Length: 351
Ligand code: NDP
Ligand code: ZN
Image (cartoon, rainbow, N blue to C red; front, side):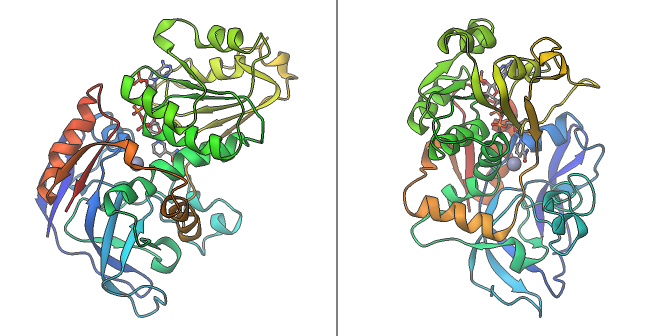
């Protein structure tokens, strides 16, 4: 079979591989729609997970089951399924402790395009099919549902980590596709003032549609000062970090009320440590909480999120700014993701 792969750090290309084998609890799936991710870019061009040779990329997709193992109960060939980016081993110790995303080691629930071939192949392997696949609901298009693999659950996990409650004032730093889903999730959870930090016009427009009450442009000066000014100097209850740079954590701490909470889902790509501003941290006594996480993955979470889309409570079409047709277009879509033209939110390839 053919796949689009990371050949080595900084190099990508088409390769031929054996079709993956199906274990007793697994499924083999062929893609119907695929999306490249910012994480694919970090993996190939920033060496974020170290060197990989001839590893098929991709972890966001919707597909059709072509084979299931003898112990799989709930899926059969022909089923259309959403594939979560994170596919934990649900019988692991970590999953039993409530941290499925770290099953087998830190961040090891992320298997596609990390420890094994990803979804940019003519076929791909899904471990623990009953625990990790979700049926694509009637009426939800495969293109839109690709956003359920990673963008929706990651943005929403940021909202969970920040523990957004009714009437909270919330800042979402970064409004790429992940941050936009954090805005949508915070609005669904009942945020009051919802400040979205970003600059690209498309993303700003989408953030407003997803429920942002104010837009803060980080290119216009300190985001801490802008938030403080808009909140009468009080700051906010929650900050969700879905983008930014080495200063973002410190800024998030500074704009938080005492007792507030930060949820970080951003990949921190440089530096050895993250700064904590001493005074704004209450000299260590601020009751400000930082929580951070990889999204948990799993079938139940995916089914619940898909139901929000099916019922029209979450419109994913706003994220899909660039649509391609045909499997071979995955290369173009990935390169577009790398260039990040200013009108891009997310590309999708329909097969
Ligand atoms: P994008 O690159 O599309 O979006 C990043 C956002 O951050 C943009 O809105 C950008 O603004 C904004 N930004 C950039 N610099 C700053 C700054 N200095 N201050 C404030 N805002 C800034 O990324 P994605 O939405 O695709 O992904 C977001 C992050 O989430 C990535 O790091 C990705 O690796 C990570 N991720 C984490 C996962 C998890 O499970 N935890 C899973 C998937 C992704 P502008 O409008 O100017 O572009
Ligand atoms: Zn992703």
